[in-house]
Length: 318
Image 1 (tube, rainbow, N blue to C red):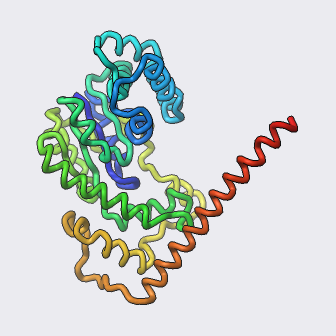
Image 2 (cartoon, helix red, strand yellow):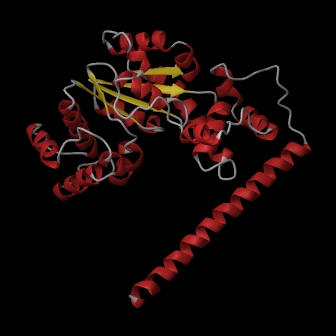
Image 3 (cartoon, one colour):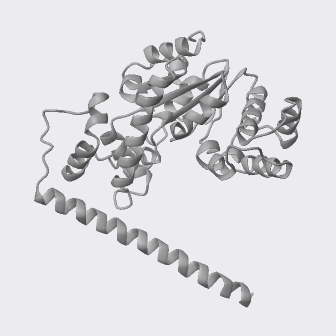
């Protein structure tokens, strides 16, 4: 059996990984190794040549997330597993499977698991590849995940609400669509329910996966790499005495409710008692925010171009 976790960034997916990874039968890879969100689009769904297989496997083993993990299989361990499978053609998906299965074996577990935000974008490919895979999709109120994302992405000056809205909408729509298409293989969980009663949700997860619930797994304490939270801002604030903002600026809250109304309503996130009407001041604030982000992106592009022009000159001097 295989377990894949997806969901928008800052939605509690790391906590969910720690819960499942605390089960004695599941080996959840401890960090966000971007197998589907990075390597899968680069390689594609077709057969991979022998040299391509080696290059892909080396890229995975040298990934920064792999290098900091324990119990990582060696190239030979994964390659041996690939040979034993006797596949007539080898795809990137097969390489992922062999790598994660070898990792699970090193951990002494029978089930491999993988979590990375936005995995749900590739759920159709994942569910179409294996008959024994289960997908868990965690969803969270976008207003709350946005507050968390602000600090995770370098502060509110660099946070892009427009990109976050589009990504969250796509994630929410996939939750609805895939939940209907794969009712026995795709489970959608609200972060708010997980936070309110982790034990009850953990029991539901085990029932869905056909596993026996193990007492204490809801704390996530047995998952490698889990420190109790996944927020660098929380750790910094505890040192500096700072506090996290409790809400978005009013114009952004209204923008979220306007753009995501159907999805937020479906998942119970739309507070009908709040005035969501837009006026000219809100429109002006949104426009200024777009201009500010455009200026930042332009500055970043110009800096990269300048660095590209100066680096060859520096190399010639050396």
